[in-house]
Length: 386
Image (cartoon, rainbow, N blue to C red):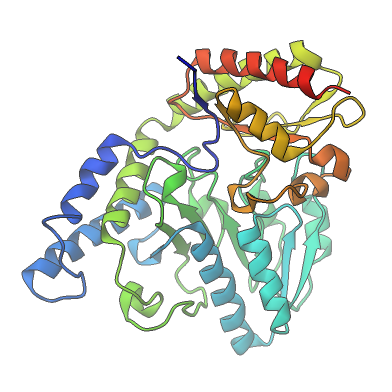
């Protein structure tokens, strides 16, 4: 029987059985609208507020600072649009500072704001997709409204030192947002220690359901709705809540936090084994896109275009045909064979960048999965060698 190995957990994860178990009653018997005042609705409302309390407690926030959304993309849109537009009305400031290696949910939102008259500074990143503290400080002026720097890069796993970046900003009137989609549930997040005004996260990255996420927005932060048409989420996000999804998100997060340290150490061993195996295959011409403090959940490699015929679609298809699911970068840019903007931001040429493969691990993976993947990778290198 053909073996299949799933190493694309940064794109999405399988639904945990306990999460499904928690969700099912809200897909069947507890079907009430949480905005209804009768008992059918009130039971569901209580469940949503309990879920809100759970999420808040995990990140050291107040429940009133948690807003449920349809996922990380909406959460980023909500926060970035909501803070910048509201703050502009209050102060006239219209400058946004971000970096070139952000997820498109952030970059495209900011580009849309530029079309509306805002302007942005897109900072370069180093080879490890990190933002330099001194460079960030040099770009701060009285017109900056919002800074958006991701916590963990979704393609390389590199960890930005958010608390250090926040502390470097000697201006309390500037708001700081961080996309925490790839860090929430994988490392502990304390929003007070980070010092941020907002973070965003998604359920399906942590064995929860697709189509649900949340935004933390610090109390007192100016923000306006993205979606209109209802008073849900304290008038900040119109629309009937995805009840089962919210319940699933809270359960998935709780389960992840219960094993957060054990999972980290286990997955680190898998990644270390993978890197060792890759070095044994071709240390000279396979570049590891990571650093010492990168999260173990993501491993990005790039093939040297001088030795290999790089084509991201062909590389991923070869792996898939041989039983390994991986990606060339963010799942949100699938269907295109363009080089990853993240890889290009680190300094890779187009030819090298299209030779990038992202493997992403979870606690469900086994050592045997890594060994099998290395066998397939060995075949791939022979197939694509010039």
